[in-house]
Length: 301
Ligand SMILES: O=C(O)CCC(=O)C(=O)O
Image (cartoon, rainbow, N blue to C red; front, side, top):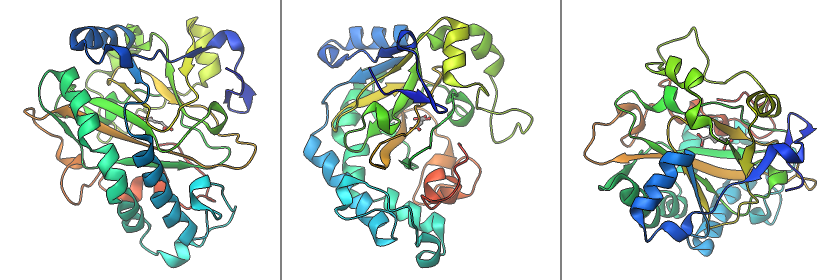
């Protein structure tokens, strides 16, 4: 896979691998669960109707076009390099909440197709968090390596993150990257147990190391894909992940969302549920990177 970049450096080919497509195991739930346990992630190709994903992309980018950040036609997702968001939408959190709650987007991100897959994996009815991490990542942006454990395990750890590209996301546009075998990195996982990012201010979720150096040191690879509309990736709370750099040569914004799912019968972390979820820190949708104008400096998580 050519074109994978981290912190401005091309990822050496030996350090890059393709996420394995497990869609063929959807009719074999036990094998699917075993694969998730073994690999720490699942990539499922073309499990959502591409047209529905494209419709969601169009609606989200249309909102960003209205604040001057995306050029016509909206669904191409090309940044203008300008923004009138702060001027037109003084409550940035409320704006991002309304974009994140676009019905066409929710029908995909929280719909029955993903719900059925998560129910298979939990072997019980599954429930998504209402709070959504919608990410519009402009050129130069990336998410550092981290585990999701410190954010989402306050009630229990039976939580899975579903990462959904909203449109095609080639590697040049900075999609999800999963560290191969990181679900077995006991030296990082064991000390993380009990770590809650919003109560322990002495620690950071970010692993504080760039993905290339991390993969080199661990003798492992970074797994990613040229994602297409309709694909999803999912992983548990003990899998290190982040994103590649967006270095799109045409200035295309990477659009994706990530939503957590859990068995419906288990207790919930109230921060992420309800019609007005407070989110990790209590600032609601305003705390998300996505709530900042595309032209603004990006501080990951
Ligand atoms: O999309 C990204 O940039 C990172 C995704 C992520 O951290 C997550 O899904 O938990």
